[in-house]
Length: 86
Image (cartoon, rainbow, N blue to C red; front, side, top):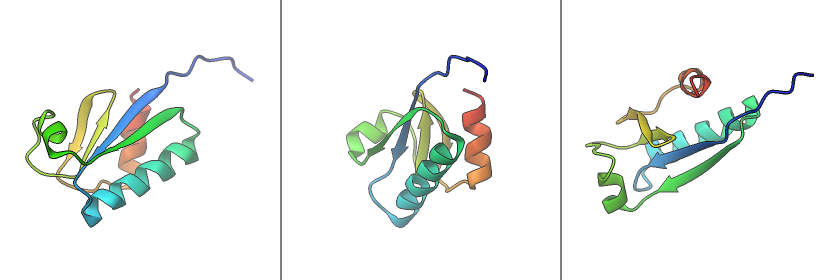
């Protein structure tokens, strides 16, 4: 078994609670659990906090304070590719 230091990820789902936001949150949880990634997933529903990320449409996926996806629900494979960069 390799002893690699795995970084902890901070993942945020930005959205006010619409069905697409809930879908993105569900898919993200499934991908993180499936890959065994150490991550904290936070749902941000406060519109003032969402606006600080300078996005015009939700849902949005933020990883380590970087907006990766906004305005749509990505596939599980796309989320895996994004998380693999970290």
